[in-house]
Image: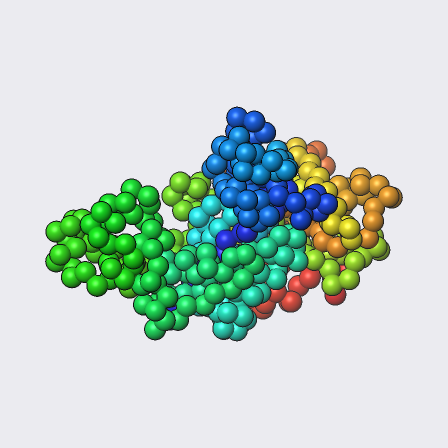
Length: 391
């Protein structure tokens, strides 16, 4: 089978908020509007009181009078979402993004490097937790609908693998409304027709189901009920989430095996990450205008800083020097570093940018050197040419 992973962050908005407020971790917490707003996400202690996402906050407070309500930090949520998606792409380039907090991954090729799909799934969970301090659940199957259902069964913070031969045993006892893409209206209609479980749909003859719901929907429902829907991904962002437009930023980050208090050690990692990011940018003919860094201390305090350049760039030296300046600007009171990351934002096509030469500037310089390195690494591998400080 082609192993498809569905990765879904656990209570994403709430988890990001609680990462910044660990003192609230064991309390019922909701993220959203304080009064007339709705619940965007609820922590698992809040869910035990019946609080759910999309619920009016007034009702959530009635269900749980001790509920702690936090306002969403959309800038932080976006930053964590981009970092999580970047983590996925380090494992496999075949990623279909569904939303800010979930995606499908085809790990058929990655499996040859990293092991069987359940091992890759555990790697995804461990990496997201280690780098972002939040948890996710992963479903593994041969098709997208079964993988998505498996991730729901894995919650919170688990992995469920469904082999093709186990699909009927797992799917058929379930409520028909749990099928991927079956909403409340379709569920109600199917139940009025006497089709209450997935097994009821699966055992209905195709011709009879055609008469009940129409040929197109009948074929789709049968494919879902038997777990034979699509096993190929639409790489990029799903319709309705960015419309398939290219990402507007690109980055990388690293969690140290041991916390690093030495500035030179952090700068070496910044250089390695910058080299990786700008190399990928040049591979896609992209340049960016804003350089951002993320630094997480040993106590999980996370700081992000950014600087917008005068001109868009893909030059490793320019991005690195900006990243170093941002790091040094944090001051001498910095604690030991647990994680460091580099991101270039505001990406656009390189051909649309015309470099303004400075008087006295050499015609050939760091940009040409970067491209020479790119050619060498494409031919001889990533270890062929590296900055001297990384040797």
